[in-house]
Image (cartoon, rainbow, N blue to C red; front, side, top):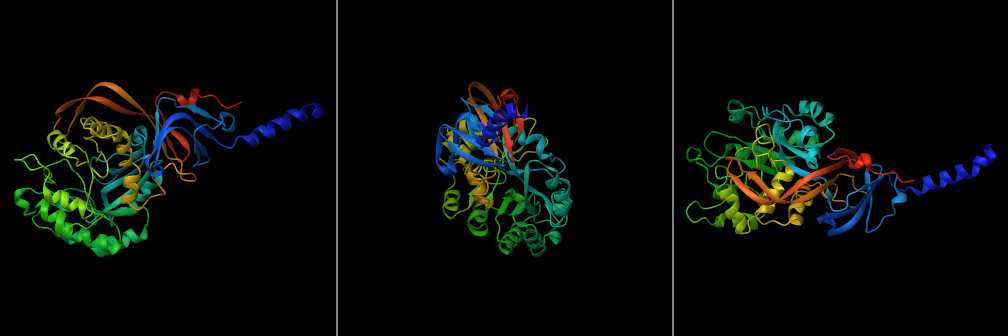
Length: 402
């Protein structure tokens, strides 16, 4: 009996050896700006890494094949501004990021140096989503005005030391919501950034009682590589002159000197009047991010595909939007080429999208409606080589190669 079965077993062994890949995404339009790929190609995954991106990979070489023809395949998106800890409206990342094709999120200031260890235990170590951090200059983190206005708890030395304790996990410094007049919070955040060798993300108001101006902030205090979030708000950043409707010359000058601008949509920081004028004048965000929290996910619905869709309806090309959501943020936080690419041997964080045409309603942070004709929708997310989100069961109905 065993003699008769030998040819079959030998053939089965040879066939198994021929299956080089665990997963094959077949026939999708790959957009990988880091590798200058914008074409219909196949993407093969072996273990938890991208094994190959090529025009025609034989299905027989993969254990599982998923048909993604007619869809777009990109690196997993990187959300540079989200709230997953500390802040009272924070969200658990796996509940909202993976369903949007977002495989990496950066918590923006929820933890300070006094609370980061707790954040790591409770959130980072328990999430399938990759979670990184901009560490708040306030030692206790983002816990409301009584805490965030306490200049005695803004310690650049201790903040920088905590960054160095967790290199690559804490990727920068955050200053936000400082309600007192003056520049103390921003200056101490920049000092911590200098001591730790990391960028600072800035969210500070320019209300008349603060004594702060956008021009001084961008041109005199922020450094090249620092990021101002909430680009299309007009309380944290006066990007568009209220009288002329023109982008401020100092914003253009700041960009030339290397200051970066992040979308940071959120529940109060994306306004159609500002965004529309700025986009018409070519002032797009360097990075696209959501500022997701409990309220911004409900009314504005500002996950990454929603933010990308809004910018596309204001004239941005899909390829440019993907670059600002993958390679761009990876470079900003010194994670490129580790992240933000489908390069061979890189971690298999992959998103699959449908680009729908029709009539779609979009809301800004003031609940003002804008009618668009394009909508990007996530259908499949792969994190670390595993399918973690599948909107319509493609991975379940896909044929296993036989």
